[in-house]
Length: 320
Image (cartoon, rainbow, N blue to C red; front, side, top):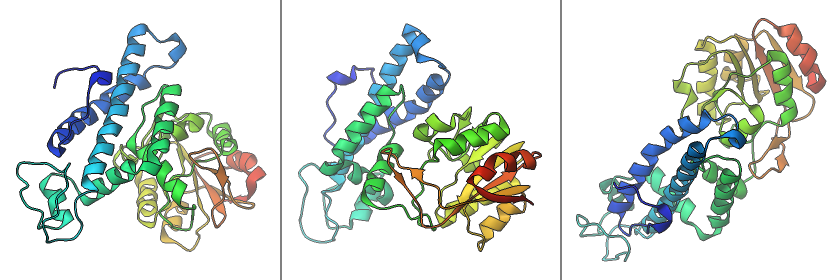
């Protein structure tokens, strides 16, 4: 595909062309992210680095626009089978009948039901302000907008956070707890369950997102972890904690002492602090909200007394 000025490009009209563009620009994003992470201070960045950032941001925005268009088209595919209902914008040479279920049609064009659902969420008119705000915020912070960030904000805008195994996985830790963790460990080398937004506060040297999958990576150094709260994911993160080798870790979880995953983490821990009251997590829009139960900070490492000295300001604790 030829390099084009994105402001001069029109979005393709067919699913086949949209998919081609989607794959092309999605494949370029990891390389851009790696290059941009190496820039420590954008005020001192070279003109070439700034040019790359501008190009990367344009492509990230364009990728979102492609997926909005895909969502507009897939939303028009009839859900029920039978009949001769056709969507004007749903064009593909190999699709000459609509007497199929929506899922089978999506499969034929190379999309999963989950992908289509996400694209259709992006395409809803009421979500366009969220998308534009996310794009603007990314540019302001010298970052790249992502589908994950946008969908997280869309979902957060439509439902309350229920921390008791709700599956609502993305509320961010307030800065005072992160600073306390830094006071214990000096630096945070890794946050294996994060995102660009959260890492503005955590400032981990390395962080993994939902797209990177921290469960598949090696953990190292001093780890900060506020894991996803869905039942399946938190079990997987607990198992990863148990099997990983690192220097220290501070883990923020619900005080779900009745669960197997909690015991899995505790079995490796050397200290714990239960919070007085509930942590008021930060939502993507900057407002705060509290889950339905209290939390616990779990420490793994060789400095449990230092951990207790710092974190007892948030509740009561003990060595394990």
